[in-house]
Image (tube, rainbow, N blue to C red; front, side):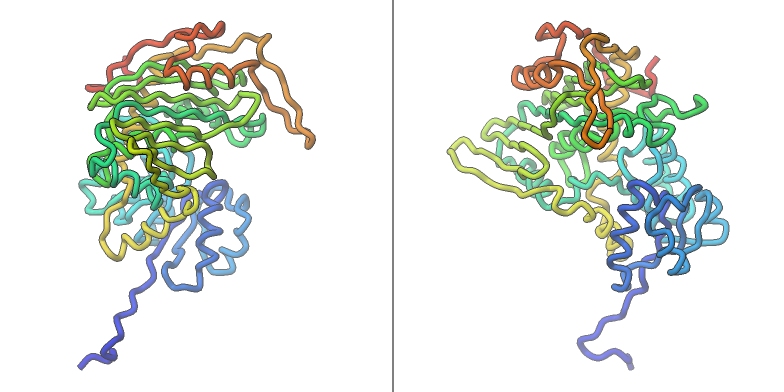
Length: 414
């Protein structure tokens, strides 16, 4: 006879976690977990970080008896975890995801999925052979706002998608590029392995991914880019670009336009306009929310996607127990990686802004950043016209090559 009462249910053991990278974005996960540590939903089996002291909550983790390891392989020698939460730099995503899957862990990997499409495909193969799943932490994809929008698009409420465009002017200071040894790099220090760090790969990767994601025909799928033409520029003395303008065409013929920079004088965005046969879907900023304007004059509001940034974590923990698949897995995240690889091939040599157009701005707190005169206005003009900088005659512009992504095997393509 059961010892449980008629309305009682078995109490499930907490999900065991290994946290990989506990500084930076990893610290955000740690703070969120510690706020709910008493609920019994999870148990932190270990933390992996070569410099764990960078984590503001390091002492709290140690007080809870959480062991720390230099590498993920070190953790798996003696420990197990049902879910690996990876907040490590981009260049480690493929290796650590594959290792975690091999050792029996599900995975929540921070965005992007990886630096190159060949790495993403390795991750997909490892996932398929492991019996586990790997989620990618594009938090908008886990929000009620984006899921509701995607559902309406899939249901045909707006008709066929015609064109989507996004503009994001997000100035970053010199400290942004000095915060680690891979910021702004194409390759990691020492020259082995790709990172391709850029606005399209890091700070605004969410905004590029979201255009592919909402067009996906299933909940966990994204539209696939078929071709891209990109113009890549820089003002900062970094290896990769700090400014990009790209025109992408999906396999279904939808045009996607993407304009981003870290060196505009002012800040604006993300601004987007998703055009359909029967509606226009819009957003003006992180705080504005997303809404649709339908052809009959009505409006439908979806809410603010950033209102629930850690849903990705709690859904992943729940998914270990209930068997639900990630809303955004490696396959859904692959479109962003493929597009970024094509953008890099489109302009393999990054074009420097003219020295005379770049000036330094020093804030009241002494932080220093670079800005390009007139850049924000030029990208806003491109956004309104649906054009690239070279097509509106920007003095500093140069066209990129058109890259076919339909049979793109690996980065670089040559």
